[in-house]
Length: 260
Image 1 (cartoon, rainbow, N blue to C red):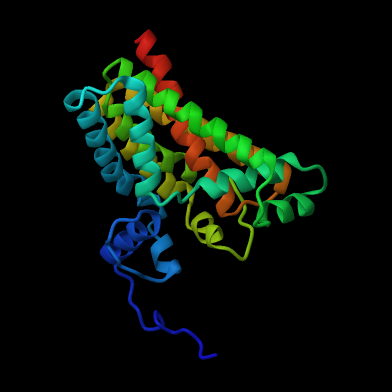
Image 2 (image 1 turned 90 degrees about the vertical axis):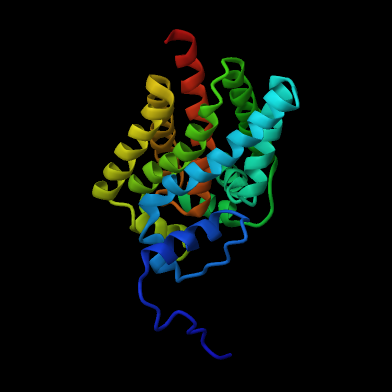
C-alpha cells in the first residue's frame, strides 16, 4: 500500500489548525483538515473554539425556554442533546471506556487492555447514564436561576477540564490522545485558563469563575484516577475529563447561584 503523504509538505497555519481542531471536535461542515501534529499545537486554544459551540447551545436553550415556553427540564434535555449531537458524541465513548477500565480489577496493563477494548461493559453504560443525567440536571438547575450564560461557560470550561487532565498526565502511546497531552505545557495551560477565567467573569461574574474552578477540580480528579489505575492517559481519559468537567462546572455554578 502506498504511504499516505498528504500532509508531508504542509506548512503550519494557525488559522487552518484552529479550523482543523473545530472540524475534529464537531460535526460542523468546516471540512478543513491538517496533520495531527499541527492541529494539536493549538490544543491550548480548544476552550476558545467551544465558546462558539456554547453560544449556539445557549441560543438553542433561549429559543426552547423563552420562545417555545418549554419548561426548564425539557429545555435542559434539549440543550444537552444539542451539545452531544453538534460535537458528534465525540467523548461519550471515552466515558464508557475509562469507566470500564477503572471498574475491572488487576494491574494497570489489564485495566488499559479493558479500556481499549471495543466492547462496553455495565460499568461504562452506568457511568455514561449517571454523567448524562446529572449534566441535564445541572443545566436544569442553572436555568431555574435564568442563568443561561452558564451554558456557554460549562461548554468552554469542559475543555479546560480536559487541558487540566492533559497537563497532569503522561501519554499512553501510540494514540491521538498522546498528541494533545504532549502539546499541553504549564505555560500555554496557564495562559489559556487565565483568559477563559476572564471571559467567564465578564459574562457570568463570580458564578462564572466558580464554573472554571469546577472544571479545574474535575480535571485534577480525572488525572488522579487515571494515574492510579492506568499510570498513563489516552484519549478516553481526556474524553471522560471533558464530560465530567462540564458536569462539575455546572455543579459549582449551581451552588454559587444559591449562595452568591
